[in-house]
Amino acid sequence: MKRAVLTTLALLAAATASAQTAPRTVNIGLGYIPNVQFTPFYVADTLGYFKAEGLNVKYQHGFVSELMPLLLQGKLDFIVGDPEDAVFARNQGAPVKYIMAMYQKIPVTVFSTKPLNNVADLKGKTLGIPGPFGSTYNAVQALLDSAGLKEGSDVKLASIGFTQLDAVRAGRVDAAAGYVNNEVVQLRAAGTRVYTLDVTAAYPMVGAGLITLDKNLKTDLARKVVRASQRALKFTVTDPARAFKLAQPTFGAGGGTLDILKASTPLMTGAYTRVNGIGASDPGAWNKAVAALIKQGNLSAGAKATDFYTNTLVSKTIR
Image 1: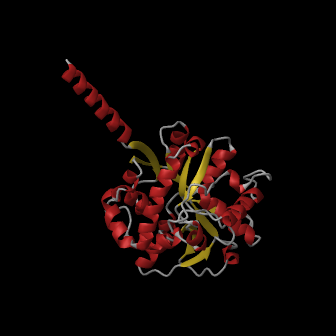
Image 2 (image 1 turned 90 degrees about the horizontal axis):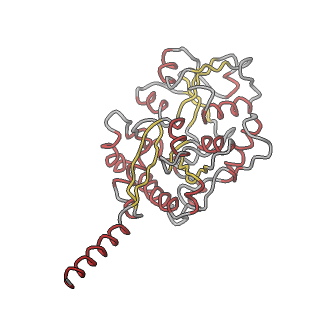
Image 3 (image 1 turned 120 degrees about the vertical axis):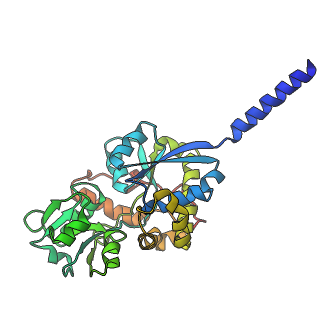
């Protein structure tokens, strides 16, 4: 009997220890579909960075409009989205915050295969946009405003979905708002001359990054996810070729090229991250972008950038 009791106690102790060390499952929503742009997150999983934090990560792909409700319902713990996704959700009362920047600036650009030297060249032209939503639309509004151009009377905005590349090639629009690390890369790879306009001076917002619920900021979960993601960002910037090789089995042969990843890595670092850690958001960029959103009428005059983001979880030692 004594031996049986001791055996039972030993089994219970082992089960308790196993439960205490079992990795916590974390559900992260990644926008769109499996794609090379999410390489740092695939790398973080493949190289065991999440496992080292005691986490077992599961990814779910979809548009942010689908993922944000899942985050608010607790079915996802984090999502990767544009800062505006967090800004407008929180402005409507949702308890969400942007906690780590994958990109230090938005990759949005205005591009054309016809000469395009400055914003004024857009006057009288048709500019294709995915639609009147998201960081692309906000950036275009700020760009036009910087040159005193009015939507409609000066520049016609055409909602063309995510067909910018084909629309420009076919001449259905004079120019389009796309991405320096996507359409521009593809056109140049095809030997096509591309003209681009930088939007970041008019709208210097950080790019896509991690968004989570306020409640996750009160535990160590968010810090662990950010730390693992920072390590993966650093790895991707340091060795994009190897990062691509590690991530490609996840996003597949049709999910993007190494050239696209190489065009993305410069967006992941900057002067601010070299001091404050990779993944940190530049407060100055946030302040100017929020001011632009207020000017556009998308936020109230009393809105403060710090209401929407935090750098407190970012490790300064991971640069």
